Image 1 (cartoon, one colour):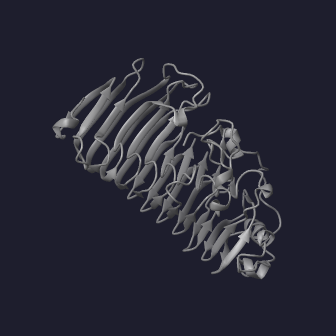
Image 2 (cartoon, helix red, strand yellow):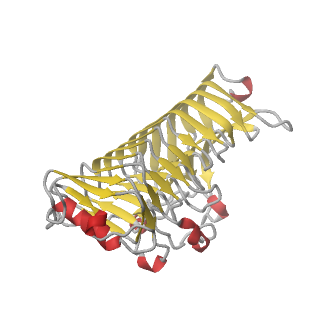
Image 3 (cartoon, helix red, strand yellow):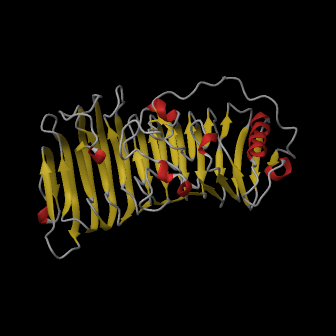
Length: 414
């Protein structure tokens, strides 16, 4: 999806643009002092939310108990754990703010259900700010209960739409892990990562209907050292979106579908966006997604930036539309404010061992800017065939410079 501005987002993602807050701007500042208090209400470093007043059943508001569990755990020294036992717990907005005195693990064995009362939210649902060495793990679910509010999403019609709450937002979080959990039916993005370093996401499941609006699986921006492994994502927007300022990103063993693919961008929507570089996507499968691996930038870009050192390898397409696409004239929903020459440079992009089937005749689309052509594009063993019967496999290449070896002859357009 095309995101709002960092600040908005932070409100949602600046990038948040969605994202939570990601939007633009800068996440709100917090004190550099550790959270005070805490520890006393927890048993031996373990804070069980049911012992702090949370009630299972999914009907009683347990926000206060969960927030107090965070305050206690973050204020305790050494290893601290917040236990969310089996059961359904209804909660409104949660603000997990650091720095913490020790290292906190959130053990999610039960399910947190987001309130559907939008008046409760100033921005996101679960927002984690300035915390290091955090672990979120378990077999439980963060259920955004999006179906109750998706009809209020107007972003397909206008840029300045009201951004609904993202489910899980990590801002200025470092050396942390999210593993094993399920994110379900977010109101907007399922996970948004902003100005973080060294974040590991593994064995996570992200699920929403293919027609749910702006329910990106995992979005990141202005972050480095993010890895996503062995994760299954099926949503109504990008399975993974890698926004401006992302560097040293590794995506391995991800299954995407339904969804809009694994995307870099969109790029150039806002001023002062930073470069995207050193991105690797390997051993992934895209199933009936509306795009495969994609780089997208606005033609009327407001930033001068570069996307480079991008490598795709061992990618299997299963009736994915637009399996390989670089789109330098991205304009979602035809609501771009103007047309013009892109200020985004795309270079040093490699596609190796990309195989399978395409639901569109154009298995390769390299639609680059005539003002700033794509350069250093290589295709090695790209063999994706159109699965339909009413046309033939083809490639569409405009203003792209590079080389192709071992590819299906119809795709060797470089």
